[in-house]
Length: 385
Image 1 (cartoon, rainbow, N blue to C red):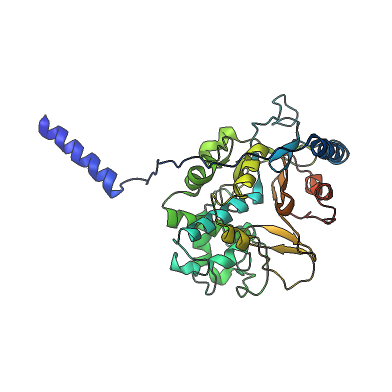
Image 2 (image 1 turned 90 degrees about the vertical axis):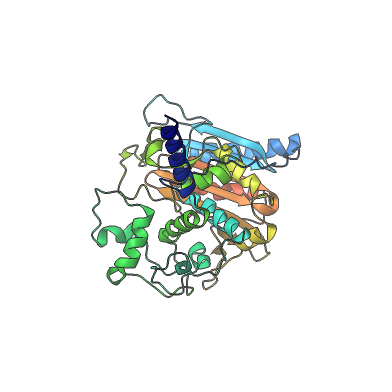
């Protein structure tokens, strides 16, 4: 009996130490000590609340809005509203705990996680992607060009089915990499890296793989460990099959449900679910150096696409409006199926606007009309996905 017990102990130690089975990192990190929001005067609160309420009533409340909005100044919530039901036509009312698919706003999390790995000196911004994935046969594609959408790669959203992918089978991030490597000759729209900006979801699907390779954690586990848990973002998660019961459907503008498809399990470019209050926590973290240094945040907010005139630009994971007076709006919008989102950060004024919905509503992008409430110099703001 003693020999049998000893054998089991040895087997257990071998499994634990040699990594048989999936690698699990259960260790947590301490909560981020976010500074308290400075007190907002009642006069300023009332002014902003009335302006937000007027915008909401005229823009969202009259257009079949099904979602949530939160507006904050200096971290203080000045307006918050929830409207509709999780299932359109149902009775399950949307509230502060309802998690929405934030679509491409997920890219802000992916980008900041990559920059954290840069900060930890585990990678460098100008490393070629092939350093970590040697089979990747696209010379000149660096981590930086993936982050700023200047990689020249084609968009998997369009090419997977063109190369013969079975639409009855879900695509995983690794599948995208495999097709890029093995079917390069069949792909179109490949251009020279660094020559121009082309918004491309492939970039962020590959960056999620990079996070996994370097951190030795799955992308969902990394986000949970380093972002969601220490920020107490209790209603935020990266979607996996195990989360099916936690998600809400998405609907077209008429209220018709949009079914899932074969692209719905790819993450990094999308697939984070969150709430407005959780997103505010993310915003507050990025006003500190608790996650990233000031220098790396400055790099993230630097405009990289200057070949076209105008105020619109892209940094590392963030869209931006850059004004002649030097002021900026840092933001990202999102759209996937019927879910769409807008996340605007007016950093120099410390203002945050978050609108999430699961019934497609283009007016969600009209958050631009709220921006002048915080700064009269910012008269034009983002409206694209």
